[in-house]
Image (cartoon, rainbow, N blue to C red):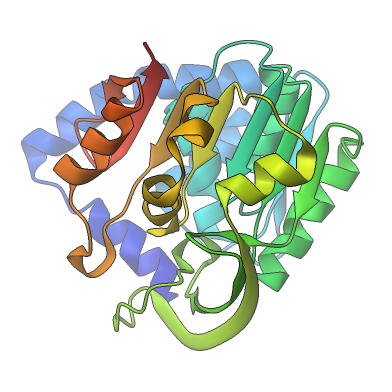
Length: 276
């Protein structure tokens, strides 16, 4: 069994009571899957069985989009975005940032479901970036989604990224854990939130989605008050690699610049902050 599949299965090693609760709680997620996708039974099957996608598969959306999925973690990401609603996004945002865009699932969701007018998607790893471009191109979203092969951090420059056993696990922080790291590295270009705002002449951003295996915390903590105050919503999965930071420090920084915690997941580190 592939390491990425093992990680997912280990995360689901639940006690009977937990399994029953999860099954009942999962009913709304399955209904959302059926709402968004024509081939929802196949997606549910892939999500439940966590098996290798040898020849790839395509999730066929009901509102005129498709998503190519290459590995089990792609199915997990699709489920998190479309079915579990891990990222909270208002309808019709004018500008959305997708930091840690991976293969483009959130960008497609924001464009096709939430009708975002402009999306700037950053993904630094070469192979993953190629998949992001593939999904954007196949959905004819080049005028809506701008794909940038860069990471996000506290300074503009070149850095190493530790490639994951699957694309969501790549991180600029070394964890020394073979369950997550493949042992390969890449040199990537990194920008900052200020750099993104300046490059695209952004006066404001309606939603900033972030999931960068720790770099999202680094980037937000290092951003100026002015930049943070130009963001209306931050919806993210946050990480503290090597315990460099902590939740109190991170959340306090956002609250000091006018954000209020609107939602926090009961399991995991998912949170949405809205401007007061």
